[in-house]
Structure formats: structure tokens, C-alpha cells
Amino acid sequence: MGKIGIPAPYLLTSLVVAAIFNAQFSALHLVVPELFIMFATAILGVLIGTRLAPTSLKEAVEYSRAGFIVTTLGVSVTIIYALLFSYMTGTDWEVLLLAWVPGSVEAMTAVALLLGLEPAFVAINHVMRLMMLYMMPVVLKSPLQRLSRM
Image (cartoon, rainbow, N blue to C red; front, side, top):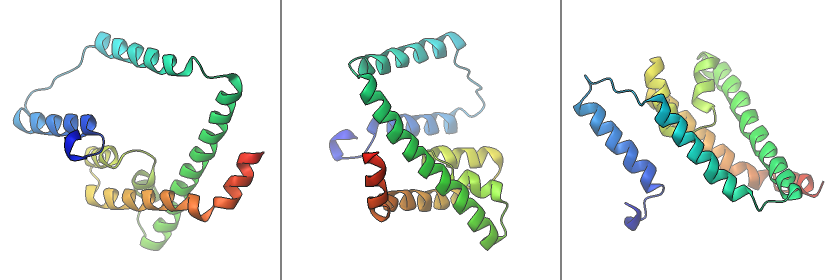
């Protein structure tokens, strides 16, 4: 899939394979052993650590500040729009909070299915959230530049 320009081909391939497997063998209840999960988590930690090893403390603080700003914007958009759309549509704000919460579209859609919510509604709202977040840096360019100079 990577050769034809599909983004995140490994994630998409694993998602498609898991969906097909689940559809074909829905009666099976497979559980990944806890030891495998702990081993995979340790390997992931090592891989992240090796990338962070050459990072200086000053760079880590700068990255943390940028991450804090991005996280604050994401959570703010989530809460504001969940409350706004709840008021406008009369839908429970908890449902809209799930639709606007940070995460991938497919993960939020899967959570909606698990909770018995309308997956199309959650997916559409999630895409709207992503569009808002992608437009925010353009709209907030000068305040963000001032923050980065502090």
C-alpha cells in the first residue's frame, strides 16, 4: 500500500487484516498474553528512548512547551465544541465529547460502536474537529508566534 501513496500503510493494513479476521472468525475470543504486551511496551520504550537520548534539556523543555500548547488547543476545541453542539442539537454533551476527543477517526468510531453510539455521527464530528484543528494555526498564527518567543 505504501507504493501507491496511502498514508500510514502499516496501520491501515493491520486495521484491514484485523477487520477481516474479526468478520471471518467472530466466534473466537483471542487474548494476547500479558507477557507479550509487556515485552512490546518495553521495546517501544527503548525505541523512543534511543531517539530522545541525544536531546538536550533545553530542547526537551522547548518540545514540552510546544506539546503543552498543542494539547491545550486540542482539549479546548474538544470541550468548547462538545458544549456548543450539545446546546445547538440537544444531544448529550458526553456523546459529543467522544466525537470531539483527540484520537484517530477509526479509534473513535470503534469506541462509538462499543458504546452503542452512532458511528457515522461520531466520525463526522471527529472529521469536523480535525478540520478545526488544522485551521487553528492559520487563524492563531500571530498569538502562537508570540508564545513561541516567550
